[in-house]
Image (spheres, one colour):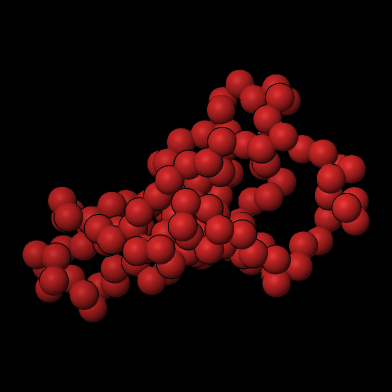
Length: 128
């Protein structure tokens, strides 16, 4: 199913759009079998959305966002090593994320999870 990038919603005071979601196929509606408690994680920086990810925990949500290139603004490069003690691959102030375990400075990253809503095709297609 394609979604329009113009659809928006406000969740906990944070405005999200369809373009912010990275793994919609992992959505599990409330009431369906969900043994790992997959739910929506909204990753944001002071209210500005970084990514919306369906995952069972915050760590997986952040890793998925990294692998989907939604966290590039937080990635630390070799040129910035001086800001982190000279070695970005052995700094306690950095987080090593994604499948590649690359260094990220996520001090300003915030997140909250949202319980999955019930799914109703009739509500989605209804004009009422």
